[in-house]
Amino acid sequence: MWQYVAVRSGSISPAVLFYNDARKIPGLITRYDCVVIDEAQKVKTDSSGELTALLKSYLESGKFGRGSAGAISSEGGLVLLANIDIDENRTPVNEEIGIFSVFPNFLKETAFIDRFSGLLPGWDLPRISKDTPSCNSGFMGDIFGEILHILRNDISFKDYVKTLMVLHNCDDMRDTKSIEAGASGLLKIIYPDKNPTEEEFYRYCVNPAVELRQRISDELCKLDQEYFAKTITSKYPDDFQKKHKLPVYYKG
Image (cartoon, rainbow, N blue to C red; front, side, top):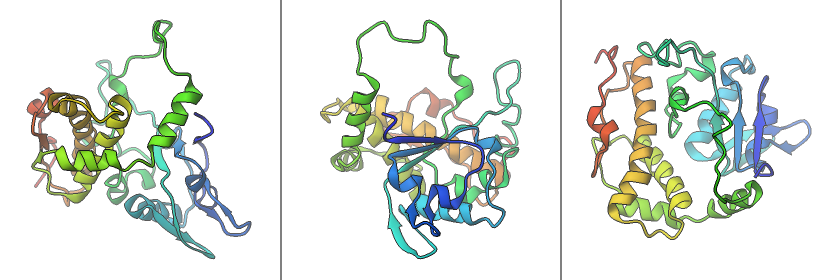
């Protein structure tokens, strides 16, 4: 799997991530299926703001240009891993004002955050222990990675989602695109035969994708009043959607 994934931390430059114009070498985002930036809350970037501009352009259109390189296209995904402070109840300390508020400037720019498909609440995940590994048979990492690599180019999954998915209160195109991307990815992993029941499709593919994007939407409202608070629901809403509350500090 690692032949398709690059993990970086520390200092990230436009030359490393996108294109080294001096050496004419394409960056990581063009050579891997996924680039993971670890310890994102500590990442150092260039002071010119070029990296943020390139990231916004790429995450919006899948294309970027730098130096002598014209429009370069890529299908590489981007994942940011970051640690945040939590209280004794395992709740984010800065949840009310926004968990991105204490991050570096490039990580809390709303135009950048808005381009992500979802936010996974790591504080809700159990810590890895000796009981974490499965006792059952499964794919080896390299085999599973090869399967995911092959499925990336199959657009039929996205067509399936676009045709069957029904959302309410989701007029924003970025919300829709993000949920489609999340649902398509889950469909590939859980139902590669594209044959779930309607209930299974919503329960295991659509609703988790809605939750991931809803968390992004909520954080945007806390940072910038340009974004309107809303609750996105699917045709078959789950408990998260039914119990969702609009951000407390949203001032519309």
